[in-house]
Amino acid sequence: GALQPVERELVFDIDMDDYDRDDVRGCTCKGKKTLCIDCWGLIKVAIKVIDKALTELFGFKHRVWIFSGRRGVHCWISDKRARQLDEKGRKAIISFLDILKTYTRNDLLVLPLPEYFHPFFNEIYEDILLPSFEEEILEQHHVFEGREKWERALNSIPHKDLKNELFQEWITTHSDGNYKWKQFVLSVSKDMKTKHKGFYYKTNPVKNIIFSYTYPRLDVNVSVGLKHLLKAPFCAHPKTQKICVPIDINNIDEFNPIAV
Image (cartoon, rainbow, N blue to C red; front, top):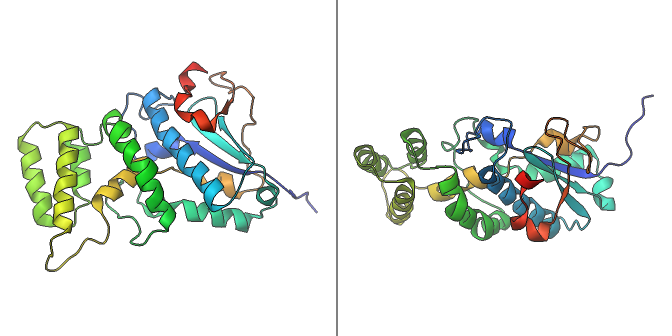
């Protein structure tokens, strides 16, 4: 019969293509085969989240993060347990981490996150996603700039009266995105503490938005398939000629893919 792979590193592929399908990027290279320093902010968050999961949840030690040479990163995990995983085992890991898989593509903020989370996801929300969103991604990707974006955010509010109140104010004023975000957070937080007749907040719209814009997009097929091809570390990307260099996970904030 045909030759079958016995072992293969467990790999993760994070690429801007998947962020564009969800209309996350709001920088000047949105939809292009390029990467700017603002795009890198999204990748940086993804690395921090996945690396934390690999080490703290699954106990993997031998891993290396590689810049793909254009607009993404690859993680190679070479622990013996990881190499010997069959497709079922790899799928179990990726399925646990791929919490955005229930979203409808191109309708990013309409569907809520799961009502009940593993504690890990609440931890990364507080430690990684929330600060990264408010300090970088909110402004870099113009999350609340332009009617299409802020109206989509309003659609995540189940309370029609609050949604209409914010809509009427924002459509008639010229407040910037940071102001809208702060008003959104305060209004939703206050409304969630109020008892309503006929509905309740199953999940927090603020958390839904932050997860939607910051949580890693994972290529499931790359991680699950034992035969899936992936560019090897230290090779040159055929389009950019940039070398697929390792990234120091302990100094991730210092890495600049533009300078490679």
